[in-house]
Image (cartoon, rainbow, N blue to C red; front, top):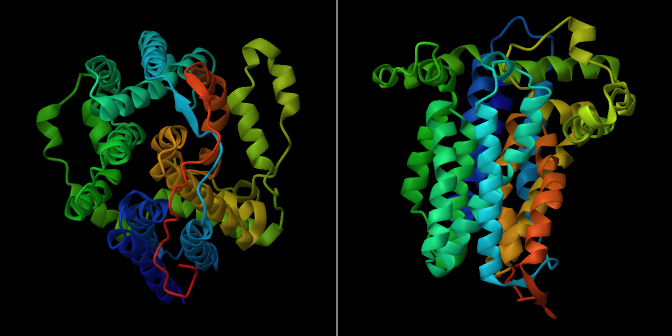
Length: 430
């Protein structure tokens, strides 16, 4: 039963990728990007675990069924979003936007520098707490300043905007090259590519995207080796990075499976046994963890805000995930709403498409949002669906005021973005 399900999931991934490759601007839309992540990160692990005798009975089959449903929902959600987001279609004074960009970049850069000066033993912890979390909270505004600067440069060729963007790029390159941060690499490339797509109509050739997808699939499964060499205690060993066996690491995942899908399979099997669903309350706990500072309200008050939830895999199988591995969004989706948890991916795809349609119609606020959010929408697959919710409060607190101060006046009508549709294997509205 497992092999047919693996084939069905592979077909779903290929269809998501194919509809993006053969649709105008499809490679920038969420279904295509989700298909690439499913194919490069999740599918090889399913292949490797297909003959794992130690998984709980039925665990992998249940996980595969949910994965197929979730991939389909990534397509259905985007197709359902026929109209662009009409809110926040504001007119801006570009001089104030540039000032906001420089200010956000300076603040974020300062906190990234301060973060790097903390004692090494604080930064080496897998789960940061205290000062590192507080500094990172403010350092993240550098991303907003960088995105604004890149968009302004693509829009009007401002040299000042280019200088601000170059300043932000230095911090990105530090985290990408020396720390091997996959999220920062994807975010950095996404911001640049989308800014020039929205403002100048530049589109990445499909052949280049395919090469990038293949390279990303190899890199994502060798990032541990890269970090070991770039962040070693004796210093970076750049001469050895070229010797990383990227193909071998990918083959190993396809033969033996990966920790992330194994984590999801154990958790889904445990929830299937005890039927203890959290109905989305885990999102509340995650927001409390991320946005309620214990240093200000006290650890007692913060702890009281958490809702006690079961730990199914640990309680049923005494299973603990491998250090540094994730549970994937499949795990928390099932734990929340059984197989109906696939609707979480419908919601992500629906709102991503609404932002995309508004951005292509000229809504500058939507363009900025779409430049910043894709990496979190993709981490809803690889990490947890909470990742899609995480940035919105931060954006509202730090980025929205900067946009409001740069706003000229509210527009009386929408720019009337055209309705862009995804090609359908079944009849739908045209």
